[in-house]
Length: 423
Image 1 (cartoon, rainbow, N blue to C red):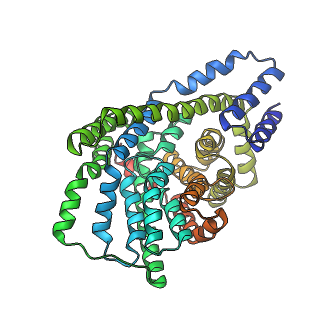
Image 2: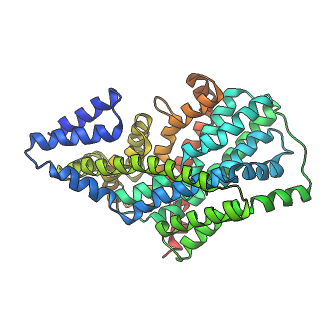
Image 3: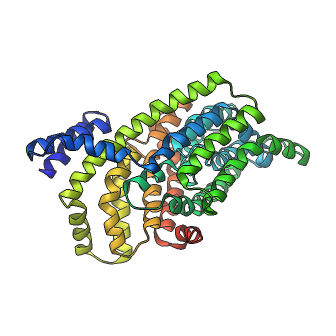
């Protein structure tokens, strides 16, 4: 019957039924045919959402909404421009640098695309950059926001399986920074080859003025990581601290956040977080059925029975995740695939934190690949270009993303060194 459940789930997805309802309906069909009490749906849905770690999701989302509404984004853009404005392709470099700075604010790639892309893509177009290049770059750099902490996908992964969220946060720092640096130099190479425009060089005084204006935003990720790495607070507590910090900075320091804007941010957060938590709850029902039917163990035995070679097993895991990420939304992919593939990774001796960071990075690449590619599609909509043109322009950046994924997969210290400092 588990095969029927999976087939029904896939059919519902192809019919365009929302993922949460596809999970719930397919799980209910399994329960009906196996004479299992339907009360299990309510119990497991509640149990899936009833986690201390899950509090971090609405908290980080609210903090991101507050800081974006409170004037943080435009200050980060000004700071980035003052630092790299004199280089050729300065706006493209601002795009990369802003994503690295913005990563400590929202924790989601889509928020990066919407917030930064709505300003940078039109600005790059006015400065005679190719629209498809601007769209592709904005989409690819957005992934940095979900790798460098706070990372919403990592919070979801920590709630799905027994992986330390703090460990994954620490493990994502070096890969995220490496991705940002690699994209930065790749853009510099492309900019010089295509003779992209540049702006004036800013004086030290101007840089200090913009840095002073943006200090409130820049300090937040620093406070966040020092607190987590130093054991001062847990990732969940850090999320609440982030909300308090966002309120303080945007109301007292920047003075751009009114009660009306705060109320709007809270309402938006409630709507978004509610849909995510419903998805988490119904995915918990689906995952419970898979575990009960020993599907993860079957897949682990099948892969390890085919080969126990460390490099080949990791390659197989990544190919499966890349395929799933191309068709399924990231959070749903995490909730379904982590319980299935983690036993395989642990079976070959991979660290849980390394697996978590690798799998999250892998699934995030699905945000810029068709047929779903929500970040690439959103950026293409902002830039008014076709998905096909955006995809072609994104191929060089996609190659960079896959290179970083290989490093994360096959160079364990890249993800395990910083988490080891937490012990």
